[in-house]
Length: 370
Length: 92
Figure 1 (tube, rainbow over the protein chains, first blue to last red):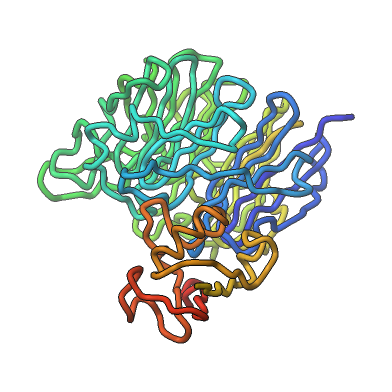
Figure 2 (cartoon, rainbow over the protein chains, first blue to last red):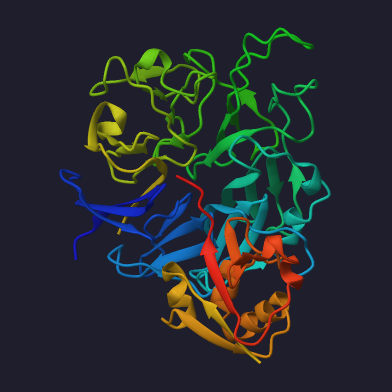
């Protein structure tokens, strides 16, 4: 059967699945699944028989992990969600990240309060990863506006990168046995010491397989006009690492704002990276004019992409997991908004079109080709 | 002694599809929930988190009284009591 493009769209009212041919001409929508319940994370797992996963985060009755084995035509709960062990004292408040592990059935879940869980049976059972969940820093992390969440889990061989808000970037280089804060160059504009060991409000981190060690980070920026102790803290919001996240440097110059939530890297070109700058105070499109910004030189310069977007009176937010890019030869970007719009940026973001304009508020968007 | 648990529609799948469960030998709400954890673990997890606390947005009533207005999980049960699980009116 010819491969097709799938979108998993996590919304405040359940998860939707959109499907199209590889030409990405017309997407067919189905759902919501897990209706009425907010979905903060999704995963399109193309290892072996494709599976779709979504976290169903019910404020009343707790968390579930939903799994689809028929490409999003139906979803069923896995046997168990992640749960803190008896006597731990913490209770699961949300599931912010679902990511592939090393083997076909291995999964990771990043949760709130910030902790990491691992499943070796496709999500039916979960074990806490103590190296980070019981880290000596763990009880000192503070919740950001979205909660105290572990929202980014990235695997790179024996390295595991984690993004925690507000905890910062943590790195394991022994397959997840031990972790250490790795935030050299990552600013925390909201602290008297703007470069602490940990406690940064990291928003999203991405890696690329095409440039070993290269990473990009959208951090909590918006501090260029800070006039308190320590003075202005410009350009701390968009960062790059070339040494597996040991050190970071700013690449925010040229952007209209260094505040934003998502960040994406091109699937074939490690120097091409995308961000969605927002006005720091309102966390909406600057001047009401949406735009995605693309760098094709690893962050040295940026170009505004806005063909197809409204030119004014548009004030939405794109949340940290609500932008993704497919892996086709000429990739398309996708993002969802808090106003329920799902946009596609064809030709690497050169031209934008609204695919769906009246979905519930969108928390996350994942794309896969299966 | 038997008490009855009234299950709301959204949780009936976790209760084997039924709206009323009859549970034996429960002197308190805590004992009732411990029994429920053994017989209907999915339903229990929907009512209580992993610390054993009743979830913030779930209310338990013994007949017409909210257990939060009684003795909490130590509220006593009597034969024939009906314990109702209800989501709190909140959210948007």
